[in-house]
Length: 338
Image (tube, rainbow, N blue to C red):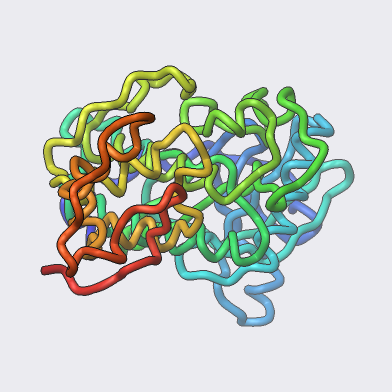
């Protein structure tokens, strides 16, 4: 378990009873376990599974009860994404359906708390380094699986990371997921903050401006989440990121190598961010040789990058081939940590 100290206090009350007939003639709603902009999530007993003897008997069912078309569209989008995915760090969906005009999504019932709930505790403003890095690596692996499936999550934030009682991090709520490089998305759709939208405080500037979704948008959000986990503060004070924002301070628990990796993820220019989110998270956890050399090489390289500046001093032969490119790749020059 990676969260032993976070499990001493159980999550909030049992929820609100939801009396009434079975949903779709099958699901007995036992209590509310979560609510959001899209719908309500109930702890539910699945009578079909009970009769067939096929566990799990208790599942989570997300229901859109508002009747808003945008909310229903978001839930259907989430269902399409989740039903085609199997990953240990992504919440599992079993099936989707509707009960009259109420669409619903049946998922595994998670027991624990979201990262947002944990961080709201007075005694847990930030996580210690081993906990944070372990969590980031698991969520990075989940996002990498999404990207391989041709999707971006689009709304990575503490409220969409669930920590189970057995110490597993799960990515939840894919209502904002979009195909990579999807066309025709206007700024009103992605920046509205409504059902199926994104959270501006964790969104990249390009996503806020309405550009087509890109895996590096999730890299930016994960880097922002990492900063919050490690410092208890948001890199831009909770405001949406802008091109002219001042650079955030280095987290005290980070050495130069890890800070160089995190700064790449927080870069306002998507071309300067790593494209491989799994490698980005892995390098945060265990910086490569290149990551450790980057802070040492930067002063040597900087003069040659200034227009009209003097040429940089020749690099030692053993460092050649490790010079940074204009579009950094975390997958390059990997090696054991010295």
